[in-house]
Length: 261
Image (cartoon, rainbow, N blue to C red; front, top):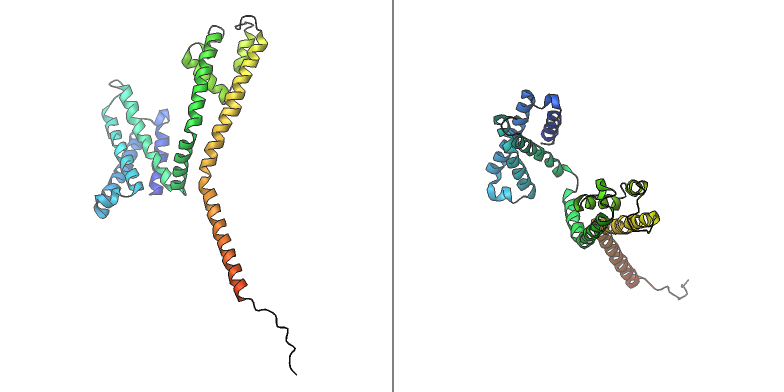
C-alpha cells in the first residue's frame, strides 16, 4: 500500500511538468492507481462488511479520499477550450490522494489530537491577533494609503501588509518605503513618529502577539508528553512508597542478648 501511494505521488509529481502534463501514458498510469485504490476499498468492504469497515477512522479516511479522486476520470472528457476552470478543478482532485501519506506518519493520531487541542486553546489568542491586525490595518490605511498604496492602498491590502509585519516579514522594508517617500502623513509629527508607529506594530503584534500564540500552541501540543511524564512520576512515587512500607514492616530489630557459649 505504501509503495503504491509513493509511486502514485511520483506520477502526480511528473504530471505537473508542463511538457508532461498531457502525457497519455502518465495519465493512464495515474488512472490505474485510482482503479487500484477503488479495488482496495471494494475488497475491504466485502471482507469487513460496511459497518465494521466504516467503524475504523482510517478506513473512512481512505474511502473519502478515493471517492474524492473519482472526478479525475472526467479530465479526459474536458478540453482547455471547453472549460479551463473545470479542468483545473478536476486536477485538484488528483492532489487529494497525496493526503493518504498521513496514515503512515508515526503516532499521527496523537499529533492530530494534540493539534486539535492546541487550536481550541489558541482560539482566543488568535481572535485577539485578528482584531489587532484589523485595527492596525484600518489605522495605517487611513494615514498611509496615498503614500504607500502598494502596501496600504485599501483595507484588504493593508491587512496583508500588517500581517507581514506581525510575522516580521518585511518589517524593515515597509517602513523604509514610506520614509523614503519623504512625506509626513502624521500632520507635522515627523518621520520619526512613523518609525515609532511601525515599531509599536511590530512589538505588539510580531513579538508579543505571535510569541504568545506560539507559546500557547506549543504548550498544548506538548500536553500529552507532560501527562505521560506525570503519570510515570506518580506511578514511581507509589512504588517507592509501597517499597518503603514493605521494608518498614519487615525490618528485624537488632538483638541485644549475649550469645551463649
